[in-house]
Image 1 (spheres, rainbow over the protein chains, first blue to last red):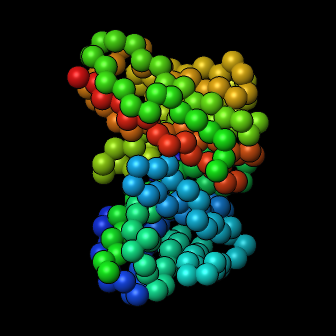
Image 2 (image 1 turned 60 degrees about the vertical axis):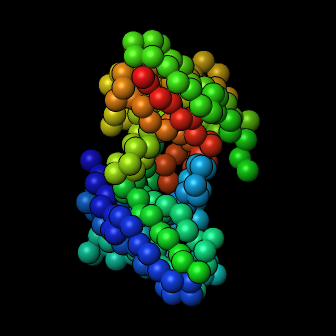
Length: 112
Length: 113
């Protein structure tokens, strides 16, 4: 089955800096890669996703890049703000599958 | 927010007692999932359902059972709770499978003493 590794497990940055979280996956057939953000006391929420037919996707201050050859994808957050502080999860699956495989999560702390 | 409600939100129970957690959705989504979240382990899938009375096991299904008799309700049962099942449990729903957006509930914090 699929295995997703996520690094780092914790990340501390100053407000205004950029943050990068990296994930690798094992199943070369995986073609859907979402990122979820979990704020304290809440359930995870989708913030951005990418499919294998594109290499990069942006939405305002967040972007995701995908390298299919190396089987890794990354979340980039620019101009970080304190409200970006949360746990971020990457995940992977393939079309037609019923389940997602999640990474173990990254706790991002943005200090004012 | 997607219409998904978990109950109870908090529960303390004793070892050996049965416990049932409920997930209720108003979105008419086909897929429903139960995850547990523990420090250092992220989100791990317990069981999932792809339709009424259609369920399957996830990676950490031992000690858990599920039932889905209606589209809107997905129940997770711990037949005989153990301390290792102390965790935060999340229900999630999605319309067309894993490669579409999943919506999560607020979670249930279960403590087994």
